[in-house]
Length: 116
Length: 113
Image (cartoon, rainbow over all chains, first blue to last red; front, top):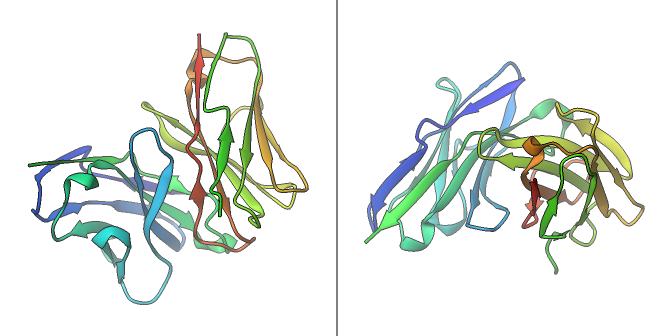
């Protein structure tokens, strides 16, 4: 079984400032890692994913994340945020053994609030 | 290409009733997964269907069931509704049996009174 911990439930930040949203996971097996974003009254949109290879992955909208196996972390970063980045962000993992990432285990989410 | 569509978008039911939610995946996608999102429990996996067969199941009671049709459209059913079933139900589709990217629909907001 896997579990995901998002340490911050809310992160307030000023526009154009950098931001890091933290994610730690626990699993007895190897996992795939994902970050999703949810805007109000919408479903989830995939920001980026780590499957294998380079531990630094780049996603949409200028976001990137770094996989750290020793610390079992997958923190999300953006060097300069915009008002439009205000949303809920979810970190998720999926067991590699099934060969598919259709069963996701999500963290509790981090609300990113960007203000002027 | 049309995204994942879910119907209805909003639903109000009474405790004890049953409900059926529908999900149409992106054209060509064969895998459909369902998730429940609540403020207290967050996002939880319900089940996944691939080629009309349930491939994965989460830890939900038997009142929650689903099925997938030959055109990959999926339905989930909740019988004997409880107040705690009030949630946003999200459907996600992916292209193939081995796929790492899921596309989510906007969800169905179910309120049980």
